[in-house]
Length: 443
Image (tube, rainbow, N blue to C red; front, side, top):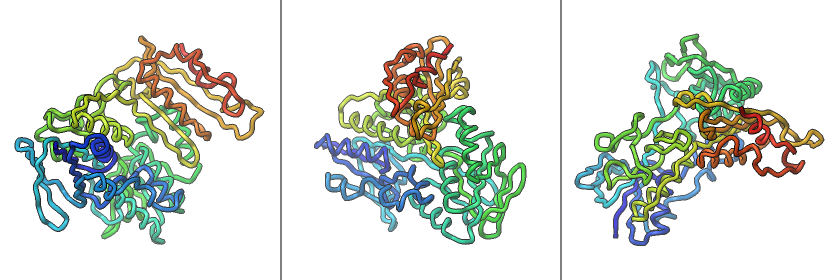
């Protein structure tokens, strides 16, 4: 028997544990997590808080007992204080204060990420919250139910910030959305798309405060106001959604790190220590768009990396194929999806790119329930390989982005898409499909 300890039991850790337990009978698996629960789908928090779904129960897709039934040993509400990588021992402390140690043959670090906390005056006031764990969602949800909570400030207009701003508005609150950038979602979409999303937010009553930097939270016991570099605003609740950083506390002094502090791993998820693997948000990942190692914290990436890491731990060589960072968001019914690089991000990464775009209705004009679709395809100027795509509509066009994800992965050129076999039927699309038209319009 070979003993593998998995530190962290959310998406990446769960995927690793399932892979080991389901495929390798010679594996002794020990799972350690400091939380009370596992498998929480944090991407559904805003749906629950905004009452778009009835409850949080179905946001958990597995439970401790299912792993125990497969033979795993699980320690919940247990903190890993340190790891002796030379002696290969993990030192743990339970909630009741008792301590124990576990030796290992291999260890998989699946410690995820931690929210970035703005180091400003008033950050420790009551009603200044984050949104990461299930317990954070419970706290925010309970705050929304209080009659004295009328105005909510959301700090950060990335995915989580925009989603929780919508949720707060759906709960009848006055919502102020702040970001130091000039627009929402700048890492995922170009301005042509985010201008539309900003209009959706504004039209639905969310007050946008861009190019504003939070400087201070004021209050005696609870937060009463937020001070930015442009003004002061009375608020009753602050939700910090600035972003996340990799949780590298256990291995930062032993393992090689990426520029942002993530554990540097190869395409087997192996770290600089051959007996230590890292998966999920605490580790690097290979981007097929950039064609280099990078950091992309997404649940889908976490699951894939957990599977790859576990097979390699068990002795089955398996290489990760890289990712494109495919993602999507739906706010007040408006859907945006993207994969790979935007024009802005491509240029920031040093690529010379061009783009082609098109806008049309999803179906022929004689069809009912017909919405406009916007598409932009980003491609490298010299090689002409597709490096990214963005799409937006009130229609669900999400499946289309998967084709572009594969195109980025396989280095498909923009010219290859011009005569792509795309079927036509009035129920679904136009005779001259917007994907075809965008590709044909490329320089």
